[in-house]
Image 1 (spheres, rainbow, N blue to C red):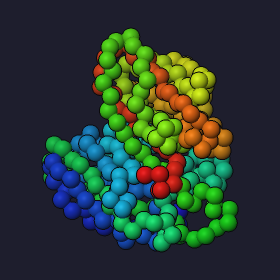
Image 2 (tube, rainbow, N blue to C red; image 1 turned 180 degrees about the vertical axis):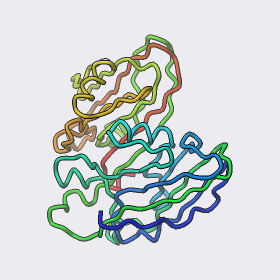
Image 3 (cartoon, helix red, strand yellow; image 1 turned 45 degrees about the horizontal axis):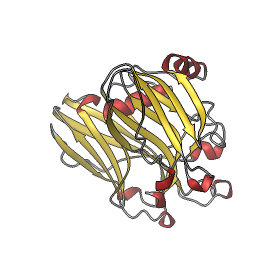
Image 4 (cartoon, one colour; image 1 turned 90 degrees about the vertical axis):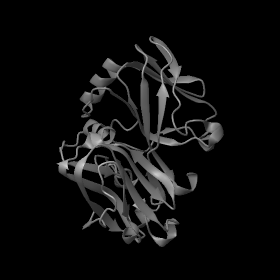
Length: 281
């Protein structure tokens, strides 16, 4: 980052509705993070029910206020009651390429010609919303060529657990190799009753742990487990190369499953952090 500039003013910041911010003024740079500040009579993170970043009209990143906040707190970032940060970079990574991968290249060569941020609010009183962008130049650096075309995708899906004490295959966005698969840094499961995970790839169990065991392992690595949030963190040691969980046929994967055990029935939300080229959207 070598620039911090205000976002364009949001349009339609109302008690319940969709506030829109045109980000086309950021084209030509590399977008590393978006910082949002909430203010007004009564406007909290829980009142932001959806955040979507759209490139060329396609949703490339989505979450909501509470879930974004919980995910960032899990990574060890400091809480702030009035601020939300959308981090596209891996700021605790150990290598330069891993650190910068996920930042969104907005140069003419990227293929992105329009960029827009939409923030859906519900139940706020006299809300006000402003933002800052963290940017760096979109310049060709030999050491970064391997990752410049990659961006961080975050997609979400809701799922209703069919019964208590059940073990089910979760519908992780883009997991199926037959549909192209994806490359995952993290998978967030927002759940009150998830008690264990088993990850299978090409018929081999690669990850098998209870929530309690996993939380302790993650604490040892410097993460901060959050209530009602289960995180499959493929980059627990802050190294990306050889750690990300790849389900693409191009990587030799023909089957991938994310099995979870629940002690109660509920409707959960699953959100992914993936590192892929824009062409995969």
